Amino acid sequence: MAVRAARCYRTVSFEAACLLAGTPPWELEAVALGALYRLKGETRADGRWAELVGPARRQAREDTFDRWAYDLAMPRAGVRTVEAIRPFLREWVNRPSGAVSFRMAQMLSGHGCFGRFLHKVAGRETYPICHHCGAPEDTAEHTLAECATWSRQRHDLVSVIGMDLSLPSVVAAMLGSQEAWRAVAFFCERVLLQKEAAERQREVRGDGRRGCARRRRGVGAGAMPNSVPLRRR
Image 1 (cartoon, one colour):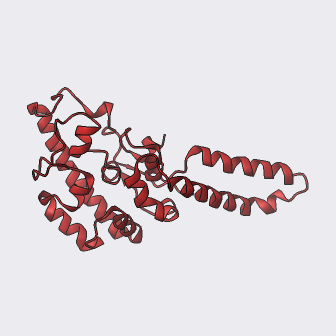
Image 2 (cartoon, helix red, strand yellow):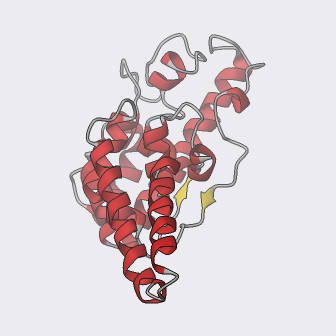
Image 3 (cartoon, helix red, strand yellow):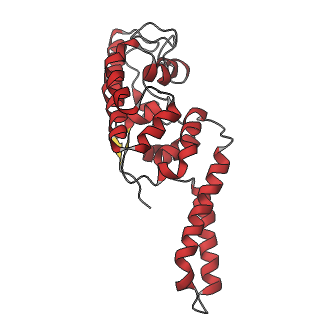
């Protein structure tokens, strides 16, 4: 469910998918709901429930965030995504605006149209190279901060969010203003649309390991809508 809500590839880890979706893991939600249910049973008879329900829900919410942050301190997978978003966990989940698009999720997770992912995880490329600049390994970080092919798009991005394109700094900038969020979203759309088109051309030519018959449906979420509405709480 978290993967679907986040509009990301099914190979994205559970921890990272929950973060991208802005939704605590269901087991933590269950603990909070259980605590509220028990409190309701203990206080409803004497009429205190109506007075306590508001503060109790807020405390349950805070406890959920605390447990979630604690669990994310030692992620089993999706480390890059977790380390970028965890310091801003409350701000990320409670942000008043901003939606994570399918292509933004690729950039934030590293699972998408990148040579390393297509080679190592999806098995659709023989080598992890960048087909756009010839670098030996194409990753989300390379696409965001290094690949010369996207220098014009990158110039437009850094003019809004600043020169630091490390993922934690990018996330901090996105949460700092709607303009920065839109700038990152625009960069992801412009660049990854072109990378996806180039990948399709390679498939048609038979340049990839498995040729043009191999489609994304077994690994990705390309047929999903481009964005997921922000879950408000």
